[in-house]
Image 1 (cartoon, helix red, strand yellow):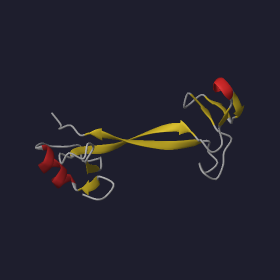
Image 2 (tube, rainbow, N blue to C red; image 1 turned 90 degrees about the vertical axis):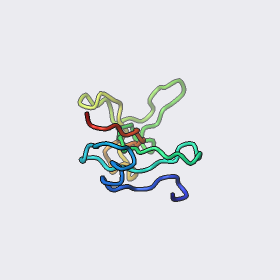
Image 3 (cartoon, one colour; image 1 turned 135 degrees about the vertical axis):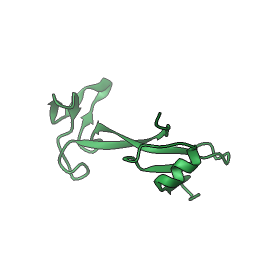
Image 4 (tube, one colour; image 1 turned 90 degrees about the horizontal axis):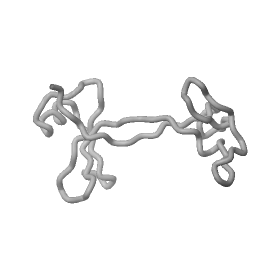
Length: 102
């Protein structure tokens, strides 16, 4: 296991660890969440958030600099900067424990 607690897995390795068939469209990894020696097979899930580099929030949630409300994404977006590629949004990631296909 690497220092970060993550280890990439092939689909065959992931299926062997979990003991069943998995969705082959996803990328899997072992995550040592509690550092207790029992890693969990997970896949990566993503979500969009306003860019922290160009969406300036004032006191009590008031918006100082904004690219406006994006109706398609249903969220406030930033003005655009180099950090987000001038889109006003960033992609966040979090691990989700894998489940076998029924």
